[in-house]
Image (cartoon, rainbow, N blue to C red; front, side, top):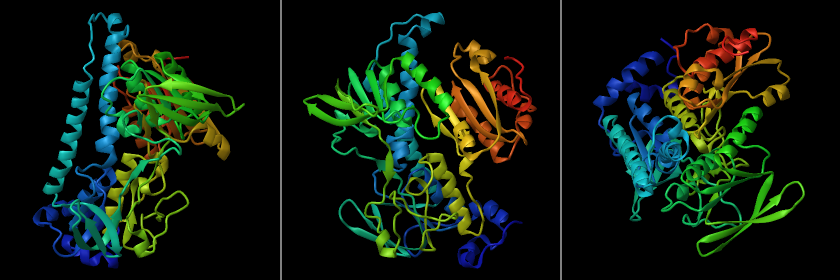
Amino acid sequence: GGAKINPGAAEMASRVFQVSRSNVFRLGIVVSRALSNSTTGPQDLVVIGSGPGGYVAAIKAAQLGLKTTCVEKNSTLGGTCLNVGCIPSKALLNNSHFYHLATSQDFKMRGIEVEPKLNLSKMMEQKDTCVKQLTDGIATLFKRNKVAHVAGHGTITGSNEVTVTKDDGSKEVVQTKNILIATGSEVTPLPGIEIDEKVVVSSTGALALSKVPEKMVVIGAGVIGLELGSVWSRLGTQVTAVEFLGHVGGMGIDMEISKSFQRILTKQGIKFKMGHKVTGAVRSGNSVTVTVESNKDGKQEMIDCDSLLVCVGRRPYTDNLGLENVGISLDERGRVPVNDKFATSVPNVFAIGDCIHGPMLAHKAEDEGIICAENLLGANGHLDYNCVPSVIYTHPEVAWVGKTEEQLKEEGVEYVVGKFPFAANSRAKTNADTDGLVKILADKKTDRMLGAHIMGGGAGEMINEAALAMEYGASCEDVARVCHAHPTCSEAFREAALAAYCGKAINFS
């Protein structure tokens, strides 16, 4: 057994025999299969939004036996991530990387001689195919798990009521015991610059350009700007990234990693204007003249391009959500305030994902959705945000979890550093892909792993070992004493842990 179901959840929990938490989680899946779901009659849970947080929460709630409905305003399920975010961008990143290998000296060095030709429409078709397969897959998962799907814009019209406005203007009112807000985020506009998604584009338009631009200016050298800038740079565009801050990679990246990362991207052909801001953009036909200004001395310069990509961040999406109808106020950054159980100021209205505090990451939203659904049945789950990893899917990839050196210094924590370069890793050598390193930070006294920062091929996969280690409070010695398969790139992670633990790696000095 585990924590007993609280009295407030007793009625819902009766569907799963009012057993202890662990048994609820085991038996809920079986029970949910026996329940047919529709929006007729009161629901146990209505989820507004079908992005990674919303659809995962809806499925988990249904598996636990709750009568669940998911409301989605778009024509397809999956939210920003699956439709115009994580998924299509990774398809283009992967395929543009192959094209870059073929058109650079890389293939020739490997003894492969080809004369590649870009078929952009075919590349876009492959991207669209995988998006459709995954969004259709969510619809299938909803059916199999008995999650009801209502298409339309969901508005909270009462603490136990969601009104869905459909495309034809008709309305459907759904009564529910609980409401979960999972409405995600939207592109933050830049004042004075109008996005048309043709010449002046957001990330959405940058994923669907009909031809390769000759010159592109990217406003913002954060995660999205670097990923999409890399895609078009590989395909032949002259890319210039304008960044207000003095480093690339956005917030949370380790400064040592960021500097090395920028050098590699510069070598790949991307130009950077660091410590600059865009003060204006004038479109003339199919070209744009961008005015940039130095933060240091105010000096201005003009940059001409035929594609301007605005990547200055995202903001919570709460339009016409009806929060005022139940007395919920947004915070100073437009987010929905919640407690550590994801409950708003209205006890049975919850919120997760990009519309609340924390990093705007799909996997963070997914975990919050699962925890929130379990907590409805009396669990006491929480999410350790320090163990939520971040990844930039360029090449090399950059990934991190936990604290940076800068944060540890600011907090006054004594720490040690263990590093291992991929140039000394046998698998990276055989792959002829040796850019980057693994950097691990550990508590000087206890050896507990405090942070991991990886730049290299497959960093996005490798960072999960660090997240697991940190979630379980592992020391660097713990990791160093785990046998890692040889030859693998993940041996570099073990070697960096060894260097942090005892001061020296085996295969590098």
